[in-house]
Length: 106
Length: 106
Length: 106
Length: 106
Image (tube, rainbow over all chains, first blue to last red; front, side, top):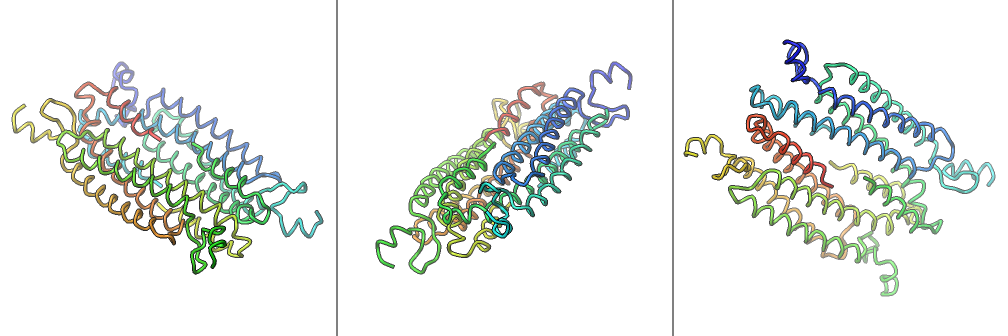
């Protein structure tokens, strides 16, 4: 794959493997880094005797919300870069099943 | 509050404020520490050019699942230590509204 | 059980069994009836050839939201009427485990 | 559009509008009909004085689970029939934004 094509289809690795577009990758990385910081502050709060359950619950849910948002960005990027082009590549079945499997998780 | 009472009602801080029972606090701390480690490994993976969206999505959802479990343990501990005793203390309205508000989050 | 007591503790059935307070029961019934109507209109829409996936998805999620809200009202009523009084009755373990089990569902 | 093509691409209505493939439509319809029946039996249970909150909660969550499953089938069908073919049609942006918007609901 030459450089021009690589730039136009940045979601393809050298070997032709699908990979996450750079923009989404850096947005998700930044969001997860913030979520990690939030998680660290909960861990700190949990070291104190007077941590209160409801505060902890609220903080945990805030981090869950942040992760969910990061997941949405990842999903949107995947739909645009890989799912929307599946029929062109001819791998619709694989790509749809793989995604549904990942979304069903939990 | 003397030492004996403090031990029997470990979920009350010195000033009588409700606080999270020690056991739940350490279980939740341990689980969140693991979730943080998992989050760090996703951040590492996201630094590579060939990170794949669906793998990232799956990992994010696994961490969400871990946080959800930590939230459930926190909730269970809160129900047992503080909600079940609310009528005795006479603060049912406050404790129920506060919890519903925390659960509605997101 | 005489009428006065029955009014004060409307969440106890004749045999002393816990049961849902009348107010919550009628609010939840009304909300679920609306959800059912919404579900019926989705079923109607699904009979037409030109139903569109995203519209159906949106409608299903709206009904899920309505059910979630009905679940929250049920939970709040249960916390107030039965969980907050558990220590007084002496059945904290049973009531907490039962609720956590119901919440973990799915 | 002739009959053969219409059969091959059953997810296009006469006017070329995207629409839900017949198979998914009938599977989702069947599942929603079952969910509706379940909802009706909760409504019946709620007419009795001795309905118990936790039972109601459990039933509501079961219906939520059923709707979620119907939503997954709808989503899978949409990904296969419409999202995977978006680049071919040239409407990737529209189709991805529309779906993300529907999924963010709630």
